[in-house]
Length: 226
Image (cartoon, rainbow, N blue to C red; front, side, top):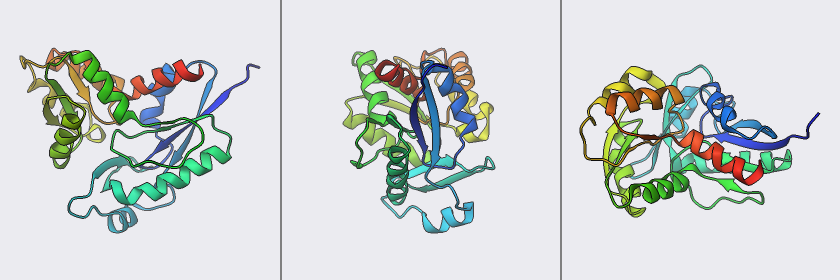
């Protein structure tokens, strides 16, 4: 049997992320095995909403619980939980770690490559846009201003719409339809929750090419370790 290289996928929600990993694994090199960890594993939605409630000015993250329910919580408060999973993944022998979230994270302690989708997505989009405006879809309206600020810090002018990947494909299609005829270079689905099926639906509805973070990240990791 071929030797498999283990890489970790850490969700800021709960594992396993069956809604995400099918698309990701399809794009990974054959020798890579994805092991999942969840920052909120072992917590109830009620605990998450009370203990990790976003304070004014804190980053708002949206993720998924085991039972498929959507959880909204503070990006700042979830950081120590993500760090604990990074430590665990390294102890388990993982050769690289992907944080399955396009939010903004501080420097975290790690010894193997730690891959955050946000800088990858932003730098790829900037390189492809050639100075043109880019359309961006975020899960929640409360994230629009925050996203605009982050994209502008990355040197990209954006046109932002919102639709949650955790509430089905119809909302994604509706939001993408509002971009039809927009003078945007392409559309970035700015959350690891968006699926390949949602990418295809958004492309049809908007008439724009679409950049999907989950497959982008899988391709980059495969280049490094495949």
